[in-house]
Length: 151
Length: 291
Image 1 (tube, each protein chain N blue to C red):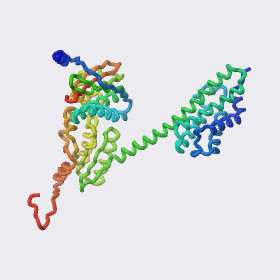
Image 2 (image 1 turned 180 degrees about the horizontal axis):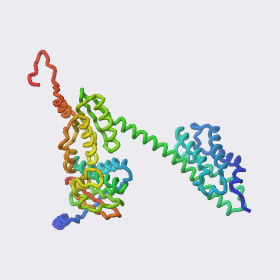
Image 3 (image 1 turned 60 degrees about the vertical axis):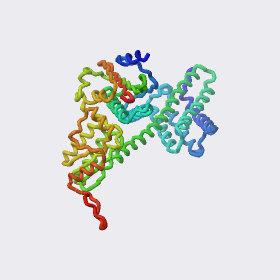
């Protein structure tokens, strides 16, 4: 039993249990701070440490700002997920923006089509435990990050 | 035979107003403490007057009609004054909606013999008054939003105090989130204060900033560069351990900015740059050797 569990974790498709769901709409810049506070609340609830909390919030903040800047807002699903004995927060950012033409390039440090530092996407990836990005030009972008409580 | 509903309603103005007043005065929730009955009558009369004057059979079905502009203006006015007097939005809404009953009753009396016409007229009047009710709500919300906007402005104004901590040293504690608008205010007041006090060192304290993402970092770097252009040195202080780790992971390069963990160490650094020394005063009884 224990063995089979371990094999599932080594796969990229880890079996996760969703404990709690929360939706958040982002429409304007003023929504960023309430959203960050909401994420923080969830992180505090599962007992995440201060450093990981800050990393999660910062990653979320980067992605939310991207969403606002390039896609005029979108929706975020905040989930408390659990894997074996570890809890974490999963955030799914969905927008219907123009999409990213070259995801690989967007994930490089210092690349930005806007006038920013170009650290948002790669930085968010470094700050989170798991990071997936799915973008279709003309349709939109979905970014999912997971931050484990001790990860 | 087609009855002109608008003409008929205009003829019955007196009756409508009386009915409306009767309904309002009958209502148990009437706020006599906030508005006297005379005032209420004046307000109601003004609204009925404006409405019936402009009402034609054409615009009855068209709530967007420009003819009603005057009515909407009066409604907005009523909504604002009532909000100031302490009426709840529900009470203001009820005030407008109760006009419906009066109109319906009149219509019913007049069109008793023609149910089809009665139904048609009722529907139209219903839509019109609903739209009026919505206007009062919109005005109410707009008024609130204006208050919020004004407060936001005030908060940005007062939340960026530039403090002259020493001759030639300015400190600026930043509390809350740094966004583009805020950075603009911070930068402006800081640069202005550098000129006013001819300071050579500015300390930006970010202990009150909950999260430093790349946008905030970019704003900080911009502020530092601008300060340098003015010939002053800028120190960023109040970098907490978790912020430091996050900034490193994000990949933000702050190596050419002087950063300190606390305001006091930033101040110490500023003193050493200005070649100032702070020491305890020596007392007669016990001299302190190495200060």
